[in-house]
Length: 391
Image (tube, rainbow, N blue to C red):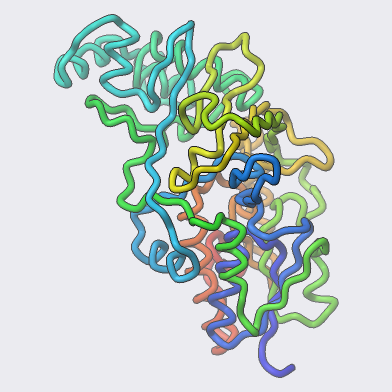
């Protein structure tokens, strides 16, 4: 078949989005996916015992302020509005998360106004002892909310989720979470918040439904496949260190173990979509009840998933790049290799070893696909890693 050919490793949202852009630009694309389904960790499937649409690898809520991303995904699926709200069971009480004015007043037994609460928290904040900007998660938390809120909602949960002392984690993890001095208990504040009515797997299948895209499930791609089989380019969405055979040593990832509880005759077990458990003596981090992610449905039963975080071992799906301070030198060596590698671009959470929301992954894949299509047609150099680079 004439014309450029691109091989994509992975049929998650990043790989599928890039494939669609390339295909619509007239480029032949082959996708090889190691699992037996598309959509990666966003995979959804109908539970036969309860009728609930299950987020198989944990909850995924689509939220974005990027109009180009919203326009892209709504081409392929009907999205239903969904406002995510999270509760936390702490010390025998139930609080709303993220931390809001209600959380503050409930924890401290006060009735503060927004202005009073700002001053109250500011008085409890603890700047880093070195006098500079917070350098890790714990310093960021103490500077942002003070010791009481940190101990109640973040310290124990963070140790369970990441498997290490919060002082070893990047400050940026907490910077993603809002602190509100009002009673808005929505977890996200983006303009577009929704879930695809038929699930993320159906969305991804629709994105991949193009005559120039061929999909092969249960077939992992190898780093050398594109070169050996005459493809013009490789898009790699798997783990960055795996592409280089872990030549610089393994990068750290966290995985999750899910404990399913099926209740075929119960319509509501916990009253909310997600209940966090920050207390250190409880081994799991949260319980998600998946019927609440589709409030437009009324299945006869319900399904609970308890999440246990753990280090990623052989055969475990990698969920979260750790990016611990002690391994940043190793990461930088991999990034240097990626920038110098010919004929391959790295995309997605694993391919760029970053924590990315779904909309950011899609936005970068849209840009990467457009840049790669132009480069293949014109012979121009590819842009720099990450986000579709000729790394």
